[in-house]
Image (cartoon, rainbow, N blue to C red; front, top):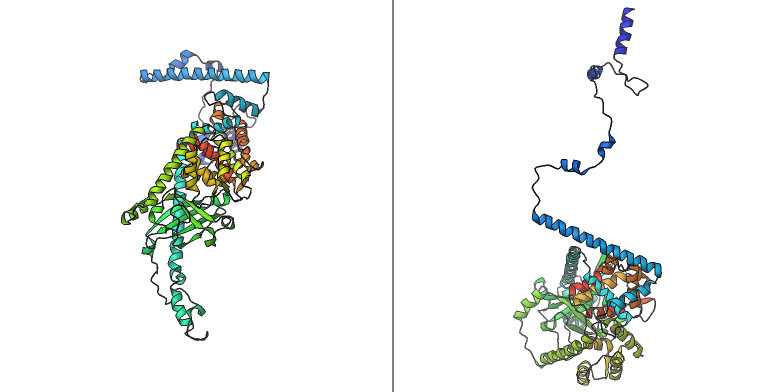
Length: 557
């Protein structure tokens, strides 16, 4: 009986009660809970005094450490300047908001009226013959004033250089494989031995049948020709990039890589094609052979090393190449422009080769001087209205071209210059016509005439115009619907949008209205029209990087 009473008393003494709980907490009997069996006494938490949290300057000063160094005069000066700039910026912001609120309460103009008003007010320094489309087009030049992320632009340029080098390496490897594996079998010299054996009457099923009747493999052939190529021979070459001079977007945007071989003065051109995101292919565009100029003062002369430089034109007869697409065969000549060249390899081979200057070289230099004099004079007239005139000339020439072959006569060109108030002296025009009409048929391609009189942007700028169009023309049709351009165009980085003076919709509307005015069809933009737009815009932009920014910012290339 005493044992039961003591056990109950012991169990009650080990039960600790806490205020706020309805049931006591029960502790176990193991030795691990010895600390819980003799619980410490918890301190009483004082009541939170919210009134002591009220801030005061004196208390804030008390908590500042005393061992901090004293502020320098330079820091105080920067702080004062920052304070003044902040106050002035806030005042300007308040004034702008007040003016916007006042204008919105009086009337609500449409985005088109807003753009015209801003263009009319902000272009007081321009000449009086500027029209509203000119001023709207000049808004695109403001992208060059935007603090567009230079670091991001540098990263994109580095990535583009790496991608371009990778493409060139892929094409070069394919060229080496093609010509090293096919040199013997495709060499025409082996036909000589075949013809000799065909002269004798030999049955086809004989063991010594003619080569043309036997199935031959590369490793089985015993044909030896004098022109058998080796890797060492093929390595002596100059590599260059090219593009087709065409207003057809599918052809103008082809990526071409060419090679000029030193050992026999031959050349070949390959096309790098991409199918989807992951599949690529390298296909021959111009077969390896020895070619000659097909027009100009060098017509009939074989291509030499000196003919290859950035900006040079290579001419071929389109009917001689079965790999050329049908859209190019519609023209008699295929004209390729060299956009870039391996200058290191060119210089190394140029020192070894001996090329003398003849009368043709001096005549070509005089021709370039004539072109430059006319171009410099016309660029002064096109400084602020280049977009409207260049795009208008393109439409005007198409209307005059009734046959659709791209050729016009002398009277048509004089009429076009007069219609667009482009002043060229009679002497300069006759000199120009004498150079361009080298065939003597009295007709000249109007694209070539426009390039000779007005000039064109350099190949570095043109490459970014093609990149922008290729991003829009993802179906490779050669033309882009206006709706797709509207979706892809981004005006977030325009200085007018950043400063708050214009909205993204207003800048986008100004671009689309100017571009629509240049199109022959209201709902589509061709590559030629797209290029003409930026060709005119390029006249007023001096620095290449500024022009690249004008293209990068809205198109994200």
